[in-house]
Amino acid sequence: MAGAVTAKNNKRSVVRRTIYYYGKATLKHWPYFALDILSSTGYAFFLTFGNPMIIARIVDRISEGFVPADQIFSVFWKDILLLVICNVLGQVSSKLQDYSLWKLQILAYYDLSTLCFDTLSNQSMTFHNNRFGGSLVSQTSKFANAYNQLMQTVTYSIIPAVATVVFIIAILFPLVPVYVLIVIAFLAVYILVVYRIFKRLLKLNAETAGAQNRLSGELSDSITNILAVKTSGREQYERDLFGRINREVYVTDSKRMRGSLFSGAVASSMIVVIMVILSFFLAGGNAWFGISSGTIVLMFSYTNNLTMRFNMLTSVMQSINHIFGDAYDMTIILDEPRLVSDVVDAKDLIVSKGDIIFSDLSFWYTDAEMPETVFEHFDLKIPAGQRIGLVGKSGSGKTTLTRLLLRLVDIQEGKILVDGQDISRVTQVSLRRQIAYVPQEPLLFHRTIAENISYGRPDATMEEIRQAAADANALEFIEKLPKGFDTITGERGVKLSGGQRQRIVIARAILTDAPILVLDEATSALDSESEQLIQAALQNLMKGRTSIVIAHRLSTVASLDRIVVLKNGRIAEDGVHADLVKKNGEYADLWTRQTLGADPGLRD
Image (cartoon, rainbow, N blue to C red; front, side, top):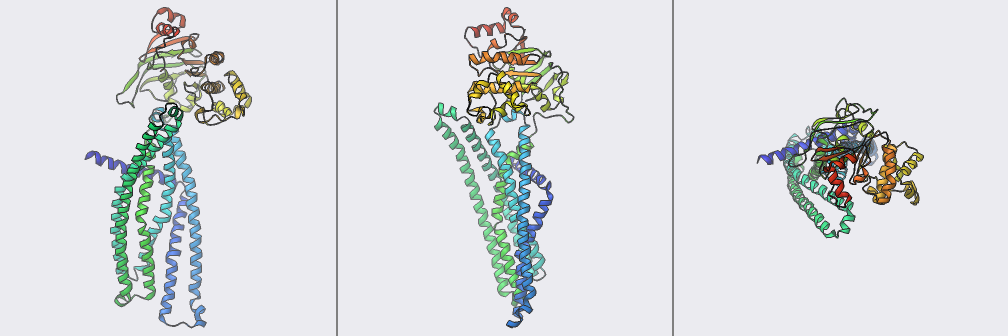
């Protein structure tokens, strides 16, 4: 029971937070919102209330007695002029309403999309590793689009409905107070009933939106890995998996439909009651209360408009439910604390030498069911300009150590210093701009080869890009492509081979020219010939730079200044290749197994 109450409160809290984000985006452009309210109110008044008021004046005048044909214009010219003015003002209000809404939607959509992008791009790798990329894209789109839907609902339904109630009270209450009081009482009950139904539907909308996001994530995951699906003959498996999630969408959407239809039936019943009350007043109003013909026209026109507005209240509530359901997941993400964030007074990292110190470092993954400790009181000093190799079996902590240096995740205890500066006290952007990182899996954008190479230095000239490609042994294959450096690589670089992708990434690191270099299995995707050709480029690249090299092939690190062997998050051995082989320890065992062709699995 307590869990159900907590879940309900959480949903309400998320709705309030969604309103906060939407409200903040709206108030940022408040002049357009104010114009939207005024124009919507003006549109409702002039065309819905102004016209009937003038017609009622004409009806009352006609009911007083016959108007000769030659006196029509002299008697009714004011009313005719008022009708023209009223309709002109109504149409002007309508166009202002469209303009202000459209402008507000464009501006707020831009702000909300930027907010989502900034939030996602500044979250930690732990956050992204636990989520589907396709699902995040879907949630971002839904969140921004939901705002547009909300503002359309507010502009074209909610504001006119509220204005209708206010104008009816202001205009009809002095004429027929009893009737207005009865109608308002029924409306109050009607709104209460619809609101209670609205709260019940809110949960169903959140469940439907969640299922739809999971469906988008599964579709994205399957399409992104379509080669693996096809080469494994697993099309049916993926279809079954997609079908199960799609079934969830079908079931939750069906529940939402039934709830909405029930809400509509209740609302329609109450509207019928209001119209029955109106019919009694129309039939006996003149006899019982002395209501004039013009006032009867007003009562019918205004009440009919009121019932039409509130008859749509169910669909409005349904739309609002759907809107908050679509925004639900992204609102939670926007409120989620950043696992890695800059301190308030963070300064830019300035690297003059490039020495690195891991001091009394402790780190464990917090997103596992049981905390997984990787490092405990770990110490490592890397002098400026030293080329160091990190080796060890899978799970020893090699790649994790470089991720901590890049602050893709944060340590729990200890310090990491670069040139004596605590990296937790500097901006993440300035830190990563001082480190050229080449990962095991080449990371390419769906852009041109030139754009991918110059990603770390967007101001680089074409000649500098060509030179970097040449140094990475990539120029030859690039120039053979039909469009050369203007070739689009495809999503994740699918149009290139693994070795070609890796050489593009290495060219990017060469062009970045950062004082610290991290190579995480940088040559693992290359064939033997390409690896030999590129090793010389990497040796040149490492000169004068603090370099951390993680390698599956120990021959890659054998010539480095120093090799650190990690085992279970600790330094098992530390020295140069020749000395470590002579020790017959952990490194010698790995070297012997690899040179004999028995790969014990060195990947982290």
